[in-house]
Image 1 (cartoon, rainbow, N blue to C red):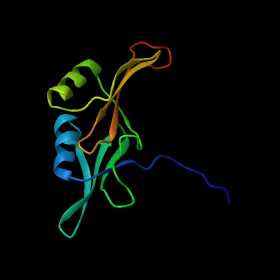
Image 2 (cartoon, helix red, strand yellow):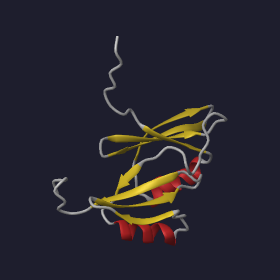
Image 3 (spheres, rainbow, N blue to C red):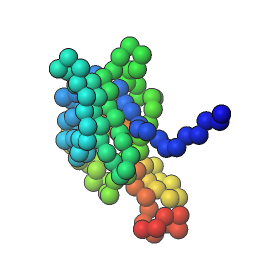
Image 4 (cartoon, helix red, strand yellow):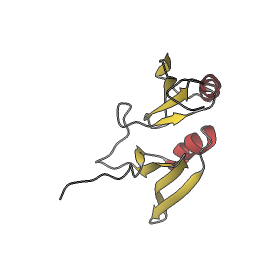
Length: 131
C-alpha cells in the first residue's frame, strides 16, 4: 500500500488561554467560529473555517506548546497596510513588517501566545493569479 494524502485536514496552533485567543482570532481578525469541543466544561478545541480551509486552536499541552518559530498559517487579507495598522493599534506584536515580493506582500504578527501568524496580500493583476 502507498500513502496518498488527499488534502490538508487543518492547520493547528496550541493556545494557553481561549479567552485571549478568541479576542485575537474572532475579535481582531474577524474570523467566524465554526466548531468547538469541550472536555470537563473547559474549551479544548476551536475551529475557524477560512476560505475552505480549517484553522484549529487547541489547548496547549506538555507535548504541544506555542512558539514563535512553530508552525505557520498565512491568512489572505484585503488590505495589508490597514490590517497591520489596526492590529498595532490593539497592541499586537509585529515581528516581521511588510516584505514585498514579486507576487505578494506579507507580514507576520503574533497571537497572544506568541504563535506567528502571517498576513498575506496577493498583488493585483499578477499573471500567476486570476483577480
